Image (tube, rainbow, N blue to C red; front, top):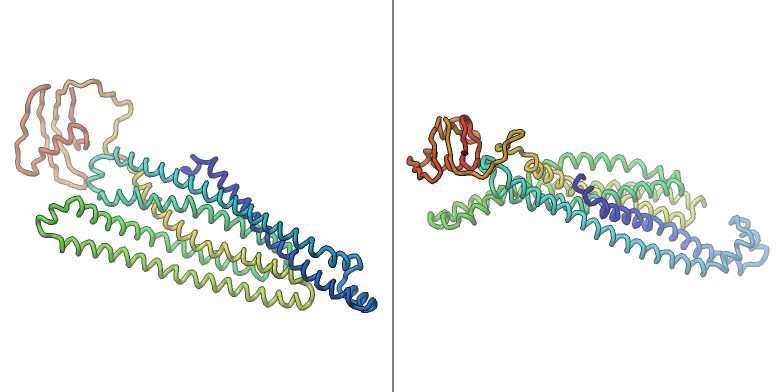
Length: 422
């Protein structure tokens, strides 16, 4: 979210457009009610106009109309139809325009956040000490800078917008339904906490599963990267079959983890649809009773049915939102593991700025151990090399010659002793 605030102007346009687009969507069922009631009342008015005066008067009283209402319904039906038709088209155009603005600006924001993350990860990797790279496989860093960033980007660009739209749509629809038909809305409400509890439970289960996917993807990528970088060695020692076996095992682990997630969400979707269908069945039952008792018009019923879809549609969206959020959460954890890593090599407060150097190097009883090792590679090494002097380091493989060279430019910090330049 902090990264998102760097682009608050573009993000504000995206979410403001989303708000207007959703409001336009919420207006259409209201117009549909007017449309259906206008057609129904117009047909009734035309039928009544053909009845004898005495029968017509009794029918008007039975309907609760006045003579003026009868004439208005008969004359103005076509005008209302045209007006409502233009209204529906107008709101559809408005929704399309603002939906485009939402999608485009949300994508701009997410791409900008991904750009920042990738650059900062690369910059951080460049600054980390050699000991960090000794412990971390290159393939893992590559996946974090590419695939993990992409997972976060998708959530910033799509998941957040879907979550906000679902919230506005759900809250706005429930308010309208409560004012439209309070008793019928109470029939729907019990399904919502059940669905929310289900989503919360699935979210808690899904995040560690997605974390495992990224870990296994990193492992697969590491094997691939190492093989491509060392293909000459693999071929020279005829290790193709062995490397293929390693790659197949890593690919199998990744596939099995993806299947575990698929099983989880394959259970979630039918369960959500079951809750939605039970809610619709209850509304159909109680709504039919109100229509029979003349407390609900066909237009009001159709409007309520459309708004009911707006209640269940965000619930369906939540499955995608939870999947993206769980993926983004797992990937963000992996990204910030790199961003928050402290380098083993760091300057002391008020460290002296290195001036132009002459090249006099002195090792003063230097001892060095690699990270995680108890045995020193160098033990109390002391020597001095003057500018222009040639110094030869002789020793068997693994005796520490390369380590000495790596300590001079401070690729590592010494464990004990000190190295002086000039």
